[in-house]
Image (cartoon, rainbow, N blue to C red; front, side, top):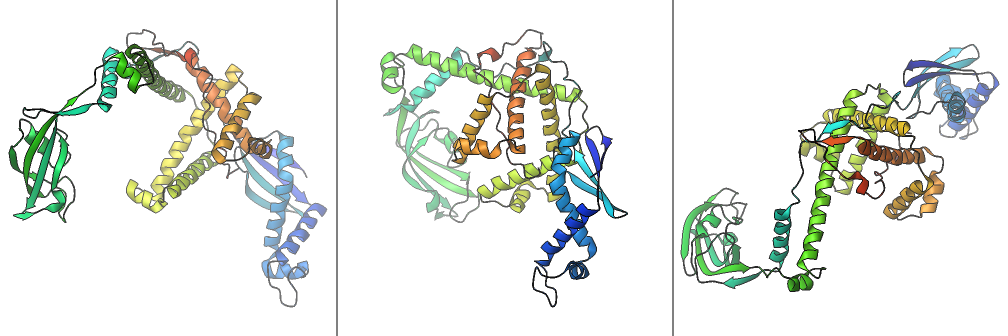
Length: 458
């Protein structure tokens, strides 16, 4: 089976494979027998018609195409191994030519794009011009107040209502002189200033005392009583009580009774640590986006159309699956997004291009740093998959051993390690050039990205 390899582009190859003589004849005979099992031929039972009769019914081209398809299915894996080619997506047949007693088949093989070298990143400075969410004493105190607010008590007071107070009210609404029961309520506890029931209600109750009656025109905030949102109605409010929120004392006794800590100091330290972790995580994510975007702008990579389209197709299938899980169809999604299928397809192809470029960049970083996937890391990934799928990790590992899915899983692990290496190598600075310490060394291990093991296009 002679094979020649032609370079079509940096990441595409054309395999020209010749099938002729006895192997082709046998493949065509097998194809004719298979086809005869599914077509009706006068005078013969299914599967018993001679090849000549099958050719008369379905045509010689159909038989030859089926024979070539089966020959490729049998021979292509070993051919790819012999030529050292690792396709990124399923190879496709470009052309079939008759030659003497055989055929020549052109097979297009799209390879995963690679960079010759990684862009400079070790010790390189990238500006990070935002300090992230506050993690200072004021932020800690605000969180302490939120804790106390959860255990606050309401106490009736003899004064006018202010923002943040609660008032017990009877609310009666009407429209055109007729009662509007759908927007009327008795003994309702309302937070002054929240403005959730009727437009302007919060402002109207500021300064009101127990026994006051407040009347005003307002608008519905929602559809009610057969009236559309925004409809003008009349409101009459009787203020029955004014209640003030009393927060518990911030002391060790309260901390011990209502939190997992014995003292306010311990609780404050825990809040401060969590706020700092949140700040760092926000900054790290922002820094990753800055570094990746900058480096991706600097690389040039020729992405084969087949690889891009296959990636976009996987993204579409995952979108479709998520929509189905949520009880939505693609058409309903498109209507809500104000898109048509062509626009969605173009958007997914654009996103696929960005995703591939980022993966190619991380592949180059991994190669530059000499990173490898450890057995324990692969095992950990299978353990997570087993938990998510409710299966046995050993069975998953055995099923995927040596498969394209396992190769892609290992690729995801490797890229996650590459991203961690990149972030530890790059330097974050503020606008004045001062180093921003993102404390990557404080992270325990490398967080592995979610692996994509669905390889329907492989």
